[in-house]
Length: 300
Image (cartoon, rainbow, N blue to C red; front, side, top):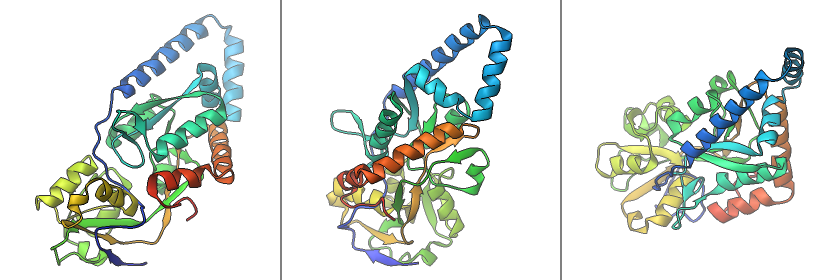
């Protein structure tokens, strides 16, 4: 594992942090999904029982029930944060943009449907997925064995390096080992928060990256873990902080972006993988990485 201190100005982009508030699209998308389910329930009342049973059995056997539902309704509902630049955030015109946002649009185009984004805080993302309020999460989700018990995952479509941000004059945190026993401002439900705990840090529980940076700035936390891309993006947007913070890289590049789908929907996962493979072959993934990160982080 490489360990090196980056002078706060990072020339290559690789990771995570953002400051934009999410919109109201999530509630609208969830409402649309509820209406869709109500209509489906009404239709079921007029369908012969034998036909319904046979259709359900066939869908269960092929694992294409959710994919068919998406095609029939004409749009896929994608869960995302909307506050995590450069992955998913709002631009100066309050448009939802970002690497993951465009990946979601590409997948929807491949399936032949529109995309609706349901914006919510990270801690609620998987609850929305479990409840059927969203179809997938496209938010650079990391794989874990624990998550794999409930969800099937796509192939990875991006890579990143872990890092932490600390005050530049804090000489007590210069390596990953130094994080042991120190306070890290991170979301305990995220893979980054788990990474912090696995390396001995004590969590100062926060929900958003902007709050995490504020905790470090004010001395309530010693550091905050993230990715090099995210921190590079933050410093790009806040050049005045280049003399305030330092970024320490703590890992080699590793896959950090998968798309989770509730188990039992193999056909949807298959189509998502086909879309990602095409995006890789036609250069779309690399182009998006260069657009948002100034570096191709999709090759590992």
